[in-house]
Image (tube, rainbow, N blue to C red):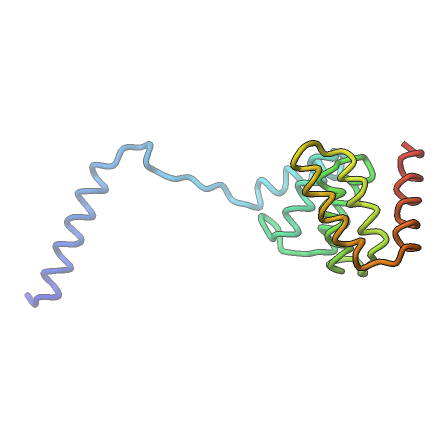
Length: 157
């Protein structure tokens, strides 16, 4: 037996002993990502705003579904119009970056403004800073238009 063969035999013996001594709790189970996505999709299609926001995130990041910014925008929008603050924030970011939707600073500001208005504490400050960063790319007329759109959205609620 060669040195490599002996080393391989020792490694396999150590692995076999460690595997035999492992407790059942050490087994890691990772569910199939598409199985959990199917449940979220079903809930989202029935209008559940939390599921719609989660599905938007899944499409945005490619977790459990293929990455698709258009799909992310679609599901974030569904949750955002129902008043889901985090979905409004994420949709605003998509409009700011032109991912899945045409780049539109007015709509980005509107959704980010709506999101910031629902947040509290440090989260509110963070969202307001992002909104203000978008405003720095806009004219005063565009900011005014975005604020009018946000106010009109509130009045329809």
